[in-house]
Length: 227
Ligand code: ADP
Ligand code: MG
Image 1 (tube, helix red, strand yellow):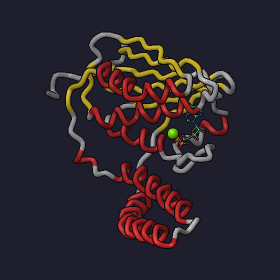
Image 2 (image 1 turned 45 degrees about the vertical axis):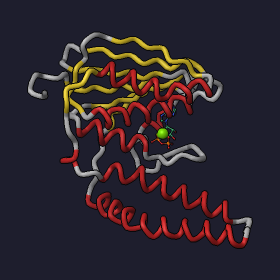
Image 3 (image 1 turned 180 degrees about the horizontal axis):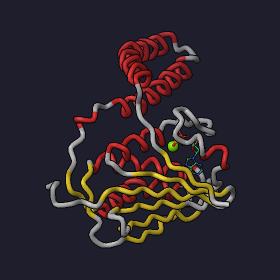
Image 4 (image 1 turned 135 degrees about the horizontal axis):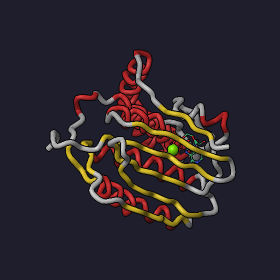
């Protein structure tokens, strides 16, 4: 009935190599883009726009991928209220939700403090909200709950009423480049997994085709060690 899988991923040697290549490709790409734009302006050529938009797509994929490669020491953990972090993401995403007839339904538990880098946790929640919106092409409700568990975790639950994920696809969510969207990169969840793993948390997906998807993130409740 409900499919469940625990997602954990790590960037291995090959991944680091790929990140190095991605980084190296970025500079010549920027210069190619500049020259193509110049050329297209001068000759007024019809393919200028197509070439530019294809280059921009490569740039976008590179940038998403490079987020993964960020060395761990750049992470600065601070004690944060998860509710505040989630609220800020919701305000930021509201216009896109409204545009897609998606309504946020929220429930916040009190004092869910975690040690985290807020920017990164925001990135994860943005990825999940985007996926949820994209899973509801005709709109619907997007439920976001925060709660603390007896095991000492803060849980962030993101639930949509969208198309759902098949059992077969559920196993493949953390695979890089796994996507069934025309404009998808298949990197959002890989990035999210990595961030949650860096925070010593977990991320789980429950889904039923045609009914919707629930994502549960667990982050360790903050002790008073983090400031
Ligand atoms: P992208 O969104 O670029 O495709 P992601 O890594 O964010 O890449 O997601 C990978 C795939 O997982 C998506 O293409 C989609 O098939 C599936 N998926 C993720 N979240 C959901 C969701 N809430 N509902 C349905 N399918 C989802
Ligand atoms: Mg996505």
